[in-house]
Image 1 (cartoon, rainbow, N blue to C red):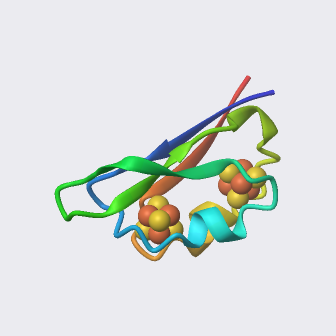
Image 2: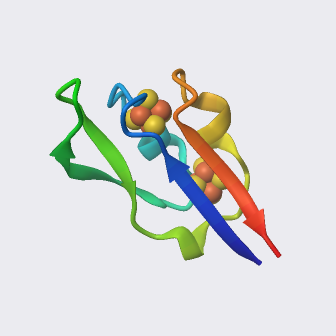
Length: 70
Ligand code: SF4
Ligand code: SF4
């Protein structure tokens, strides 16, 4: 099963919750700043994702979406 994980970097406030709570360590902090001067996360290991959706549920800014691809 392929998974597409998208981060809307312009919505992201850089809180790091998704990085902290992903059980599979899928995210890493980006070295780039968004327009709010936040280091938004990047998807570093999408192949590890188990589609638990914690990142979607815990992101306070609705900046993460996880989509299963058949
Ligand atoms: S769905 Fe779960 S495993 Fe996949 S990136 Fe989000 S928190 Fe990590
Ligand atoms: S939880 Fe949402 S707002 Fe916080 S760093 Fe992740 S994507 Fe950005």
